[in-house]
Length: 256
Image (cartoon, rainbow, N blue to C red; front, side, top):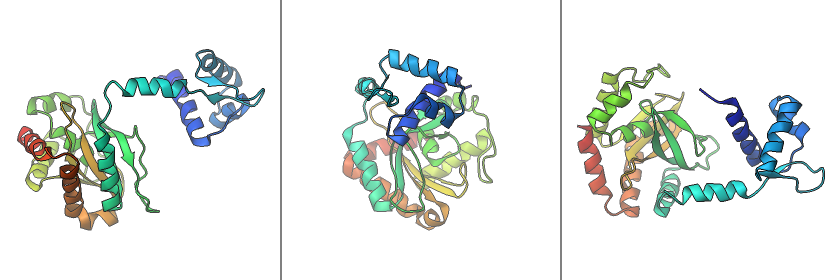
């Protein structure tokens, strides 16, 4: 369930992130198709709370640095280690595809860091992108780090939908795919969730945090290179975090 008022605030922030310039009440209302009165109330509230200001008289609204200050305060509590961004930057460079770090969010996997491929045809992903945890390689690499009891509790909350012809739509099907992942040494998906998209992922636990590293791209380009892609991830995890092998063994053991 989405709370509309909360969604509108985030829509405004994302709007300014795209346009990167001040906007008037009329421009914002027209862009979203919102009533002028409710748009005025929302912009006034954000202004009074210190999140919007008018750079020039009657020059439109623009976000203040209060957003950044609050985001920094939140991130400082549990930041990702610096090496994790360098890791996916190298993964993307070596593979030529988009690379990301995913974390669990209930029944979903959420991308918390992304480096996009520079290829014209690529997987477009942003921080905050979410996928069903059971229906994508990034999510299944997270599930490998759950105990069987934790997975069973999570499965009861999942709505198994047929997103694509290869989507696992039962607990048994997901568990079978996890066993295959352990045997081959990495998780993979071929249009399990997104059409024409393939992914390869490995568990990437950091302390007590369950994370995964994933490469995703067009299926036609990824399919013949899946083993190579998995090897790239594994090699670079070893390079950036020397004790990665111990974590990989522990994750595989938990899945059995």
